[in-house]
Image 1 (tube, one colour):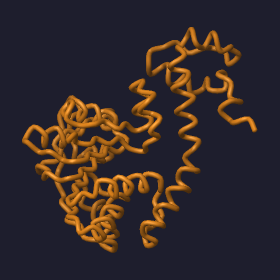
Image 2 (image 1 turned 135 degrees about the vertical axis):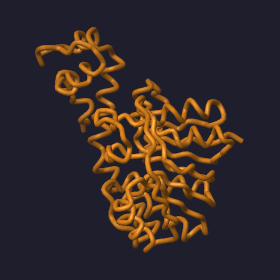
Image 3 (image 1 turned 135 degrees about the horizontal axis):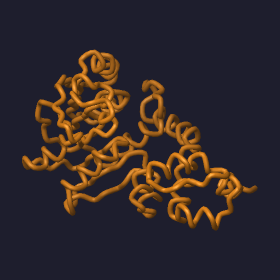
Length: 268
């Protein structure tokens, strides 16, 4: 059977190329009737492969989520069905692999339930930060049905260059999950709306500067924040990149890991 990937012609991806090439400052083809050689000349073979790989990854979401839901059910049948089960299954896999005894979550949400469930099973300490008391209360109430959680509401301190962090210093922990501060809350963050989507979370770099040494750092799809943590960790941590982040970085070997989040692991 011929796969969708092998049947796809370069010209079928042109609507996406127009958006991608415009963002990258590359002229997009005017006509959809263009052969592969012309595409290669205009946007480069690497870009063509990146776009095809990204689209294939996006189309595989339903299959990955079905498998992820099965994994979540195997871990704890009481867990509710999240929006993206594959992400939850990935996080629980990391938790079981590294067995942290302390967890700090930056940004409450579905992940709060997964961490609480793990904390109950492993006897771990779990602290969740968020800048919105109302939003956090909704998720922490659900998370406490599965395990212990210490909830901390902390305002967001932001700067004009897009850097942001929680007002309260985060404690050192064996595992830190980064999904905040959130760009959705422009008023607490104080950043102009266009900057919100490019918030550079610097809580972890600040912790590292203060001598913190988390064993594992997981970053939800936040590329600017990932870049900041990557610069702060240097060679002290092994980088296991999220799929689309690896593509952006032209790291094909890293992309083959097919990871839903980026993971930093402290070297021995």
